[in-house]
Image (cartoon, rainbow, N blue to C red):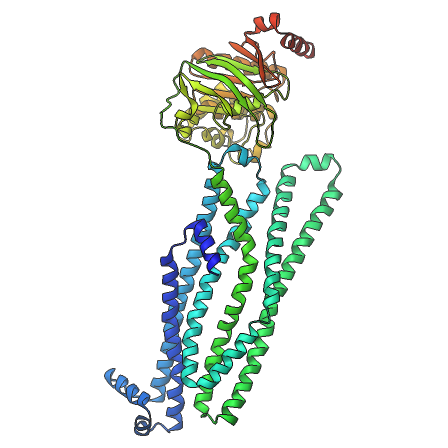
Length: 598
C-alpha cells in the first residue's frame, strides 16, 4: 500500500493535506456512527427497566452521565428522545460521509485531469526521436483507460486507511463490550483473510495482461481507422475482422477473469462472517450468559464491521489489479522526462538574418550506426528560394528536420549570422519558421480554423489574404460555407491539391520569416504546379520570407536562387539551375527525364 502511494506521489505530486482531510472526515463520521450504535445499549436498558431512570442511574455510571447531559440540554429523557438522538447521530454521520465521498470524487477527477495534462504536456516537450517510437493507439489507451486505473491505485491505499480507522473504532467498541469474544473474532478474521491470497496474486497477473491487451486493441483500432482504403483495396476485411475478434475475445476473457477473482473474495467472506456471527451468538448467550441488550449491540457492531473487513481484505486485491496501469503510466512519464527536448538557449530571434550556415553536419538516427548525413556544409541566404534535391533516401527530410531543431546533429554546427542554433530560445526560434509537409496534417474543423492555426491572432481579412496568396481562395469561395466550411479530419472532403494550398495558407498566415516546403507540388497537376511556383516567386519578390524547398520536381524548383544536390547523405553539388545542368550529371539527367514526362 505504501509503495503504491509513494509511486503515485512521484508521478503526480499528491498532497498529504488531501489524505489528512479525508482521514479526518472519516474519523469524525466514525465517531458519530459509533455513538449512534452505542446509544442502542442504553435504549435497550431503558426499555428493559420500564423507563425507570432512578434504577438506571443507580446501577450505571453511563446512565448517570446521560441524565446529566440531557439535563444540561434541557431535555427530558424518553424513548422518543433517545430514538431521535440515535437518528440524529446517524444522520450527522451520513452528512459527513457524503462530504468525504464528494471530496474523494473531486480529488480523483482532479488527479485524472492533472495526470492527463501532464502526459500530454510531457509528450509535446519530448524530442522527435522519442515521439516517433510511440504508438498513437497505445498512448491514447494510456490517456483514456490507464489513467483512471492508475488514479484508483492511489485511492486504494487511502480507502485502506479509511477502513483501518473505522476498524479501530469498532474494534475498541467490541473490546469494551466483550474482551474474550473480540479476541476470538480477531483470530477468525485473520484466518479468513488468508483465503483469498492466491486470488490476490492472480489479480496482479491479470491486471498486467489487461494493460497489454488494452494497448493492443487501441493501437489496432487507431491504425485501421486511419487506413480504411488500404484494408479495402487489399481485400483483407475478413482477416482484419478475425484478428480484431481475437483481440476483443482476449480482452473479454481477461475482464471476466478479473471480475471472477474480485467477486470470489466477496462471495467467500460473506458466509464466513455470517457463520461467525451465529457462532458468537450461541457462545454469548449459552456459555457467557451475556444480557440480550449486550448481545444485540455486539451483533449490530459486527454487522457494521463486515463491509469494513471485506474492504480491508479486498483493497490489496484491487491494488494488485491496478498496479499494471500505475506502472505503465509512471514508466511512460519517466521515459518522457528522460527524452525531454533540451532548451538551454537564451538569445531572442526576431526572424531577421543574413544567412544560415550548415557546417560539417553529420547525423545518424538512434540505434543506427550509419550516418544519414555526412559532413554536410552549405549556406542559405535571406530572402531567397533555396531548393534541396536529390534521389530518395539521400537525407533531404532529415536535413529539413535539423533546421527547426526537431533533430540535433551528432557532429558539426548550424549557425545564424555566427550564432549557434542552440543559443536561441527554442520556442521563439520555431515561431519564426513555418513548415508545410508533403502530406498536410489538418485537424478537424473549418478552413478558417486551420489557417488560424498558424497564427491565432489573425482575423478574417488576413485569412482571406493568405488563402489568396496561396492560390486557394478561388475554390474556397465556391464552397457553400466558404471559409467556414468544415473539411473533416485530414481535410478528407478536399482534393490533394486543395489540401496543399490550404496548408500553405496556414504557413503564410503565420508571417514566419522562414518557410519550409516539403514536396509542395507532389499532389498537384502540371497547371497547378506552375501556378504554385508563380506564387512562391511572388512571395520571394516581396522579400518578406526565405523559402526552403525539398522536392523531386526539378522543373518546379528550376527558378530557385540556389539548388543543393544531396546524394547519399553528402552535398554533391550546388548552384543555380543553369549551372547544375552544365556541371552535374545526376541533375541534368533527372531534369531531362522530368521534361520527357511532362
